[in-house]
Amino acid sequence: MTRLARCRSVALNGVRGTVVDIEVHIGGMPGFSLVGLPDASLHESRDRVRAAVLSSREPWPLQKITVSLSPAALPKRGSHFDLGVAVAILAAADEVPLDAVDGVLFLGELALDGRLRPVRGVLPAVLAAERAGLARAVVPEANAAEARLIPGVRVFGARSLRQVLAFLRGTEILPEPADELEEAADPILATPDDSADLADVAGQSEPKRAVEIAAAGHHHLLLTGSPGSGKTMLARRLPSLLPDLSLDESLEVTSIHSIAGVLPPGRPLIVRPPFADPHHTSSAVSIVGGGSRVPRPGAASLAHRGVLFLDEAPEFPPRVLDSLRQPLESGSLTLARAEATSVFPARFQLVLAQNPCPCGNFGSTVHECTCRPDAVRRYGQRVSGPVRDRVDIQVQVDAPTMAELDVAAESAEPSKVVADRVAEARARQERRLRDTPWRCNGELPGPYLRRELKLSPSVTAPAFAAVRAGQLTLRGVDRVLRVAWTIADLAGRDSPTASDVHEALRRRRGEAA
Image 1: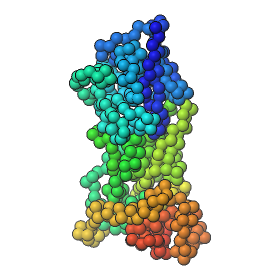
Image 2: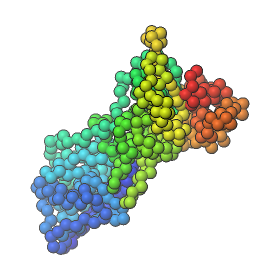
Image 3: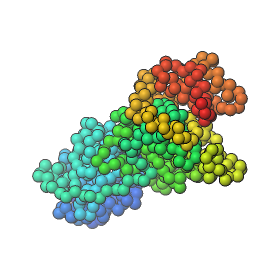
Image 4: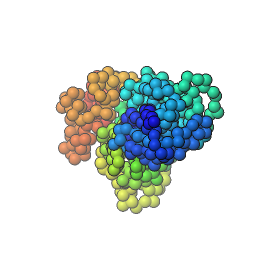
């Protein structure tokens, strides 16, 4: 007698999930067949599932087992299908009631002894299941808090296959020891230091003002200065000025981190803007994402809705820096491979920090520069013109004098005070842009600026004078106007003045006040 059963799981492509039917047919001579474009890790599930079922003291069918993953044309990747395959086989063997598995999502990797190990991408998988009408989900206990972020889905977190079967059969669920196996966090994703305060940076009133404008309008920033002048300190304190993520943004960011396997333990929902700080030896794949078969998000996507900080920017390979040009404009990364094309969100705030020359002392009044003029020129050109053209604010960071240090000790503003001003400016932008898909001035496209937020010629005259002088591109005009709107928002004005445009133009050129 042939027997059939069906369970549900999810195939992930980028941050999008597609519900997959796991159909099992039992009948014929003993054997096992898995069809439906599975990858290598999914092919290996045959041995993991069989060992887990037998370790859980459940009978293994001694007939031909055919497992079909539908839709068949969609590539399936990952070990999270293990649990669904095991349950579907036992349901086809009449060991689990068929109605108990109807409308249930199954996610989880099986150990050989039947334990359930945590998997990546649970949040986007459960979200896809909820959109497909599934009302229940069974996931590893370590992923349960993440899965429960999706309202409308009842989640059962299990430690083993035995507990899952008891849940489906409606029998007593016996306790199991916890699986302490955890994935290592990705080193390119730095945890923002909650104790880092802008008041820790001595002096630097102009650079601090530039950081405040960048935070208020989500503008890209370039910090140039000699070693020890405070560039890295300023960049690392930028996240402390940013407001918390909205619920939709939190779910979006958490989905990316879940797929990458870098969710912090005990914190299933990311509520603060992320901060990615890759080393300058990082490859292009680690920055923009990718891989030979299964594209994974890189630092640019992990910094979505947060800050991507590239310290010692000229030391990064030019190919890596130039690969950021597309996401800086579109806010997303499209990674095409032979098997599939994945799209990852990447609307990050770029912060670059660089020395003025290889020795770092060019222009210093304290230390002598030992670099040849051509070496200084070549070093400055390592960050290409198209990348610089996409940076809204450039600022020279000089080491503070002793007089500035004495004054700064008494008048330094803490991050909370500056963050309050940033929050007020962001609120003004949200009110102004409430009927648009954008939330910050830094996200506004040029046509919208020129058409919906059109300013009088007398206000925009400084920017277009720079264009006529060959000092600014038309893209640069858009970026100057975005910064001018942010300066006006910080000042509480309804629209920019010519003075705001002057300041925005000065900050784009990196000129001193």
